[in-house]
Image 1: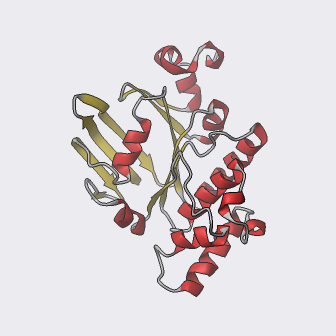
Image 2: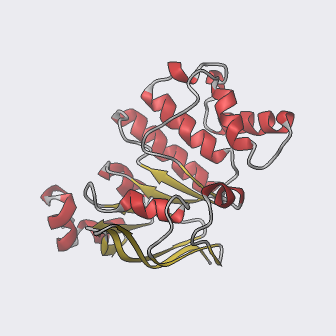
Length: 241
């Protein structure tokens, strides 16, 4: 069953078409990657899915229901959560406080929210930082906190927008394993990422967009050997012989 379907999605900003008749689907339990050059329309597509922008044309379906124009907080309550490229925690508050904010999507009881948040921190091997002020965290820790806040909402589908940007190689490997573990727990993943070794290792399928249009879709191996993708984005070092 497809948890997400996008049909001929278009998003215009005045005379600029940021997303151009994009269609794709994600099956439950799948990890779908999206790649493309800077400015290709990846984050705009995410914003249309997550309710930040209403599509100019086309339809978005989540768990079989049309969600065009549904506000982000209502989508989150129904199981669609996302992270952001620029992490903006409550810096003066603790890690636990920040994750509890996500937990309050599914409960109005503080004790329950704290229990849920602590469980999320345990899943992410981050419970040792629960009392640390968010403003004192490293980039890698802030990225993990962003994942924790989204996970605390108890999502069915998680949209990761460059969650590995700025991480060192060992930290990237750790985040890849975290994302795989989340999928193993039954969460469907849609990920935008520029770190190619990560997206290739993670994804069951990859969609490539350029100037808002989908130019390729397939397994990591198929995408890496596609001539159009190589020219538009990957470069010759990713050619699969």
